[in-house]
Length: 310
Image 1 (cartoon, rainbow, N blue to C red):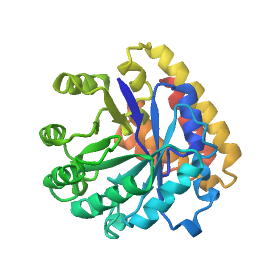
Image 2: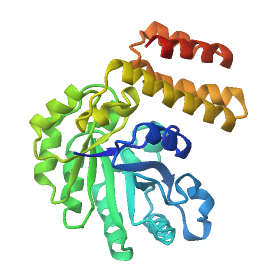
Image 3: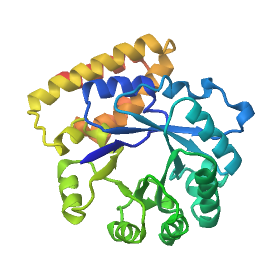
Image 4: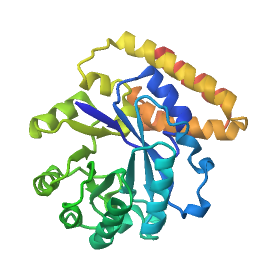
């Protein structure tokens, strides 16, 4: 099973990736948090500092966001000059400020516009090009129409989070709708959505035995050992406790040195603990108590206590 690390805007940037993958080196490919497409004359290496130098292991696929063909093509050509051979286009982000601008998931109701941009990318560049989207923004027919419109283009893959944009991350994923996408697409389809445990994975692979690639996002933060477990590795509870403590110690030491402002450091770690809380089986009350802390020393003391008690 090949496993892609789904992007987390604001979380899975280079500093976090390097530490996370050092301790949990089980993903095969990473998709970067999105970078906005721009015209050639405004593009500089500084815009891509989070993915440069292009030497990460596992390899990273830059993800871009935009709805303008010229900007998307210009950005791809610039990334090719930087040595990248694959670019992913974000059509899946469901958040309102982005959707209102007809970007990401907000573009999904406009399949012909998407196909036109894909055509220009395929005509004007030699990049491996892929899409990351949902079942639709408002209805599940949107993904089917996009697949129909892009079936004749040689996409590297289409990653599908099996929810609508209007659901955000709530409600159940829809395997029946995903199955229709699989049946219709001539291009490779990668599944994404709600694989949080080895049991979730086993149910998925039993239902879709031909799928040899999946994308994992939140599940990899809620259980850092999930990808290893999928690949057949077994860790005792004591081993998990020890390995997570090493990871978290490395992470906090690095963050403390990087973030000179305590409030930024605290906010970064709080965002991560929304996921780590699942690994530590924290109750909603315990998590809220942690997230309400405004003093880093208190937060550090409490999280260290949780890690020692695991």
